[in-house]
Length: 295
Image (cartoon, rainbow, N blue to C red; front, side, top):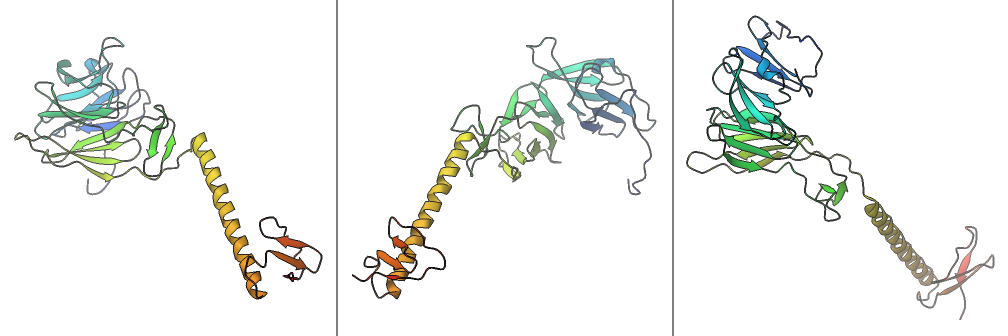
């Protein structure tokens, strides 16, 4: 670790993207997950580099985590049917058998608390949830990664609430999770780059306050058609207002120089025959010399 020298590479028979990696607490096993479909999870013995064939992981995909202890890997596995909920299956690596299952939904990431009591998961449902590993009961849910609905239409999400900008719906999946060493906080990262710290319920029922430590980065937002129309109308109003102010100031200045009020200087004779009037006027040529009309 200190030298940064490459000591070993772990390769699979077929090329797969690597979305997640996990190392067992004792450093014995390395697991990787990537892609979607059968065979996307691989397990190696770190010391020897030997790939371990675990048939129980044949259908596992995307989300993996090692609970405290040795020899067990939790991996997201689809349910037996399209309508059944995916589960986090705890697989005994050497024994190649499933020892427990916990419902996790469409989870892209898993994390165990340091004492192994809790399992946190998050994914395309835009919610980070925490289950009791023993009972399977949900003890906490956090939806801070979910973009608020826009008041314009239910299918439009507010991308930058304070600015009133919006874009078409896009899932803000939770991509990464980890517990603090004392187990009192849970960190999660969303697809939009935001990072949250969630308070984890303690045995006495208390928990730390939630904190958004890295807000959504300032990404470009697409204006909806009605917002474009409003923006154009607002710019037109601002331009008209500025033109009125400039015209009023010009008439006032001409009247002042001619010794008359702005009302008295409502009509002005120009040397080139052009006539400028307040309210309905045309600008004379730049070379024209103007003076107030005598009344």
